[in-house]
Image 1 (cartoon, rainbow, N blue to C red):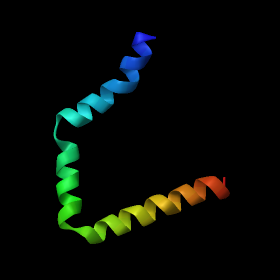
Image 2: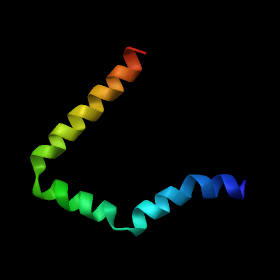
Image 3: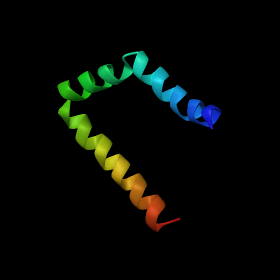
Image 4: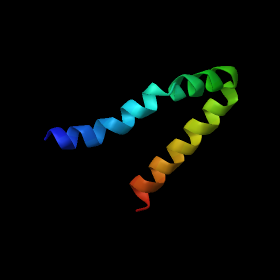
Length: 53
């Protein structure tokens, strides 16, 4: 069980420890237009996998 949890959470810890999330947050705070583009793309992907697969 411990190995499974480490397998799941280790990539998340690596992602958070490199300040990547802060860089992404700063990028989207400065360029609000890209937030709309990204959310539209994510929404279209979700709709595709939900209804067309």
